[in-house]
Each structure stands twice: as C-alpha cells, then as structure tokens.
Amino acid sequence: MRIDQTLNPWRLSVAPMMDWTDRHCRWFHRLLTRHTRLYTEMVTTGALLHGDRARHLDFDAAEHPLALQLGGSEPAELAQCAQLAERWGYDEVNLNCGCPSERVQRGAFGACLMAEPQLVADCVRAMRDAAALPVSVKHRIGLGRDERYDFVRDFVGTVAERGDCRVFIVHARNAWLEGLSPKDNRDLPPLRHDVVAQLKRDFPALTIVANGGLSDDAAIAQALSDVDGAMVGRYAYHEPWAMTAWDARFFGDAPVTRDRDAVEVAMVEYMTHLAARGQPWQHASRHMINLRHGQPGARHWRQVWSDARWRDESPVRVSALARAAMAPHNAAAVVAAAP
Image (cartoon, rainbow, N blue to C red; front, top):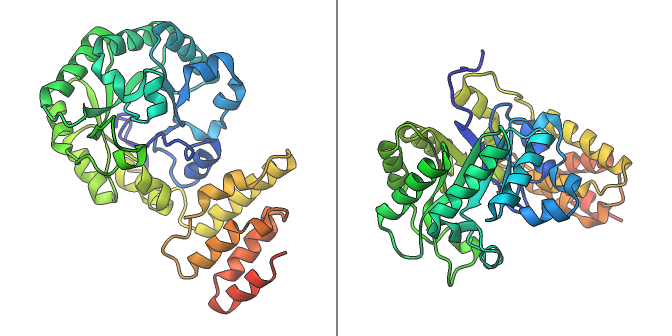
C-alpha cells in the first residue's frame, strides 16, 4: 500500500507531553508508526535562547515528521526560536496556548494567552516572517468556567486573520487557571468536542485538529469525521502498541511492524548505544514500559525493566531477564536473582 498523498500533514499526531515526549520516547514511537506526526515537549524561548540549544533541539532523523512546541509570548524571541527550529530541520513550529500550569502562567504564556488573541497573532506573524516552517497554535476552548462559544471563535478568528495562522490544534476542554493542577485540568473540565467541530464549520478553510479524551481508535475515527485531524495524548503513551494499527487505518499504508519482540530488540540496540555514550539507558526504557500492555506476563516484564537493581546491567541482559519473567513460573526466580 502507498500513503494517500492528499491527506493533510496533521491527520494524526501524538501530543506534546511534558516529561514524556522527549527524543527517546519519540524514537520509540517511530518504531510503531511511520506517518503519525510527533511533537516535542514544550520548550520555552528562554531555554533555547539562553540555554543548551543542542540538548533541547537535537533529534534523530527517524523522528520526522516532527514539530517543535514553543512556550513564550514575546514575538521577537519566538521569531528567533522559529529560525532555530528551521535550522535544526523541524517540520513545524507550534505555539503553546493551552498549558494551564502556574509556572507557565507566571511566564505569561500557555493558556493565559487565549485572553490576548492580538498578542498571539503577533507572535504567529513574527514566526511566519522569520522562518518558512508552518506555524500552528495549540489552545483550549475557553478559560475558567466561561463556556461561551464566541470566546474561542473570536480567538481563532483573530489569530487566523491577523497572524495568518492556518492550523489550530484544539484541546476540547476549558483551562481552569485557578484551583486545579495541570493533571486535573486534563480530566475535570468537561470535554466538548462539539465546540471543536463547530470551529471547523465556521472556519472551513482552516486546518482544525481535535485533542483531548481520544482514548481509543473509534474516538480518533469519530474526530476525523468532524475535523481535519486528531491529536492523541495519554492513549498513545499508555497503550503504545495501538499505534501499530494507525498507518493502515488512518493513512492507508502497511503497518510498520507486527512483532513486539522486534520492537524490544530495536529499543535494546538503541539503549546499548546510549550506554556506550555514557548516558543512562533507563532514560529510554521508561518510555517502552507499556509495550507489552495486554499480553500475558506483561506485569512481570514491566517489573524487571522498572527495577532499579538492574540499572548497572546491560540492556541486553535486562531484556533477556524481562522476557524470561513473562513466563509465570520464572517471574519469582528472576526477581529473586536481582543484585
């Protein structure tokens, strides 16, 4: 099979998730799906302009298509970061207007930017003028308990018209900026995907991507019947094997793999290279911990990979022990043999 070249680049993606979607996670995900668009964790403009750029921006070519998510609110700084993203070879720059954390609010960016659509438009325009990359905005459908549709409609309209933004990734919940943790903000504000669908009807020329609460393939398919794309978060991370069906179901291409053992072998090789460079291989192993979700013995396999007592062993040996532990009569012996 060949991928349908008429499909838009934002048809299906894995959401930017702090502490999760680092370069090791993305390398793992690319073993499972060729075509799903991947996003970095949010990187602030200050970290890029004044910190270790290579640490934040380096990635493996296998991760394409790949977008850099930025956190910031100064157009000139965002423009400089967009130029860096272009120089590093990213496929897209995404502006975070959806994160509700207090730390982000103190920096005057994230979800609180939805209250300043003209500033967001200026930020997008500055990035588009500075680099040839597509610029998208990820945002919520509202702030606080105010659920009026005209708020998000006017936000999208302003940013599209004055910032020439063509791609909006819409988390279908309000951001409650007071009284809720970021974790609770992913669960407690009610999901309203009908609002995202209405945005597509009101702005048919824009690319509208739905995010939030897409917890199985049926939900992804439903979203794609209403809007242009679907962005998946925790479902992709906690049930990564589901991604192996996406290339066929949503892109019309052959699955990248049908063998979990082969994926584990590839990850072990990757982790071995990390260890050879003096980097802890556990930085990568933590992301594949759900690879065998749903298989008999998966809990025992996961326990071995998670056991800190094996941290000085090679990934090859830990993999062998984990695979052995999947057999019920072997699990106790493997745990008992730990240093």
